[in-house]
Length: 160
Image (cartoon, rainbow, N blue to C red; front, side):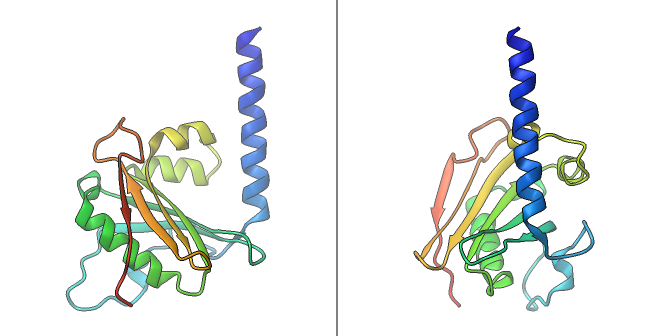
């Protein structure tokens, strides 16, 4: 009986997440949109890939971004760099949330619909948050797998 209720809860959560995803409008047509397509200054090194962007409808919604990177880059310096680059990349968006993953396979499976939201949540290593109206911007992450994804939290101030 308990297992049945858990399965129903998972199904309900999956349906809810699907409804949210359908309400969001994909910004890019390809599922493998990469930041390499944007201009970089001479000294910048690319250590992350934007896998998917969902542009929210309306002013109150969030632009949702799925980002993958090598686990070695889950450190303060690279996370600050990533936050500033996401701020610039999504300069036209007033509100942004980016899920940070260290596993490209999880991102691919989630985006193809072959992975449920709870598994995505377990694989998520961090979050970038930006709300230009409230001037709130931070990035939080875990330095190692299986640690809370808010182990380290950095308030971001980017030079723009």
